[in-house]
Amino acid sequence: MCDVRCLMFDGDRMWHFAISVFLIELYGRNLLLTAIFGLVVAGSVLLLGALIGDWVDRNPRNKVAHASLFIQNISVTVCSIVLMLVFSYKKWIEQIWDGWLTVVCYTVVIILADVANLASTALTIAIQRDWIVVITGYNRGHLAGMNATMRRIDQVTNILAPLAVGQVMTLASNVVGCGFILGWNLVSLIVEFIFLSRVYRIVPALSVKPPATEEQNYLEKKRERKNTGGACLRERTSMLPPCLRRLRGLLSTCREGWRAYYRQPVFLAGLGLAFLYTTVLGFDCITTGYAYTQGISGSLLSLLMGVSAVAGLLGTVLFTKLRKAYGLVNTGMISSCLHLACLLLCVCSVFAPGSPMDLSMLTQGNGSDVGGMAGGGHQRHGYTLQGGNNQPLLPDRSSIHWTNNTVLFENAPAGSVPESYMSITLLFLGVITARIGLWSFDLTVTQLLQETICESERGVVNGVQSSMNYLMDLLHFLMVISAPQPQHFGILVIVSVLFITAGHTMYFLYARKAKRKQRLNTSAPNLR
Image (cartoon, rainbow, N blue to C red; front, side, top):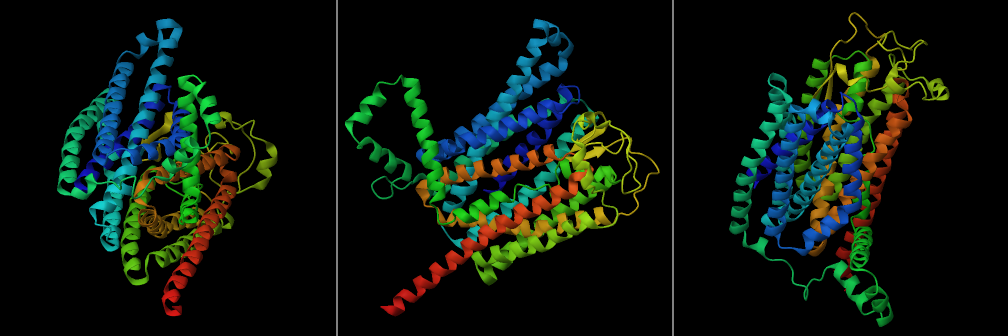
């Protein structure tokens, strides 16, 4: 099973890294296509997460896994072919239909990439939220070990896969990079299909889903109640055109899926995990772009990202140790405290020497933010940026190389040193150490969802959980858009910590309810 996930993670990480680079290269090293792609991906999962989960619940496990795998890999393969053609004949394509053929190609690429992401979401829900529970025989200890192992594979491939495809693109070309991904996906499609089929045959329990007479899906119960709700409603529905009836059914499934998510005992824990996505305190392009403005070199950023991955691996080890010693619910509480304690270093960095935070910048408006070329002013630290002190967190991509979501900049100003590295040191010390508690907490909530949600609702509930994660992730990008300057980053740090604190507070509320319920269950036999 781990071999299968290793191949899946590898392909996913390669594609997620490569598509961002390809879109930047396609649009003249501009962020527009990347931003549109991000919005389309987040919006589609937000809208369709419940439908994807319901589809996973309604169909046999092998058909869901094979269909998701096929759609994902074929979408990536076709998208790679389109990208190869566009890169090879870009000038010729731009001359057709007054350039509108280029727009069509961009649209096709984004749609195919989005379909691949939706299929990947379905496959993740099926394998990591359902198959793994059945394979471990509902044994909590084995389930915790399997979750931790798969997360370690995720951490390792998150570094190695983008480095592999990045080297191919750097040493050869974008066309060769597309060809490499195309070949990898075709080979991995065959290998993963064989491995999944083998696992399905080895574990007979995977072929069994609870029959409707014993354990009926919550959404189907709602549909039955609606079908018996009266002939008048059925007559009004039957008068609608078939497409509108289908749309009505899809909207009803989405609504009932969100209701199913809300009524889960682990609702607060899942919502708390989603709140952790609204943060700039991670190794994405925003934080690394800010680090560049503070004089941190690209090579050092790469090194810090490697250390961060090691911290994530330590978090998986900590999770297994804490769960054995203190139980699953207490593990989440300890991990929450560890996560928040480390993030206090990030808050301290906002007020430490070398911090560029300047609240007066908020009153100047963002009209000069475009292009980051507004001049004038004096920064609180001595690091002079090439474009003036109003340069946004993400400068012109012509000076950027991307590697594994880390922004590596060329042409950094030579000989410019900030007044103090205390602020940026505290920031990254907090971000890196916080990942130990973060990954331990993430694994805790993941296993709570696996153990608590009934088998017939795993798909739809985890689909809505994915939607919530994407929704909160969108909020953190809106935060950056509203405060894009390095002088604003301290505000973003504080807001991020507030969101994370709110998420952990929700988990503590869940833990209190779970412990109270456990005490009542243990005291009930004594009363009898």
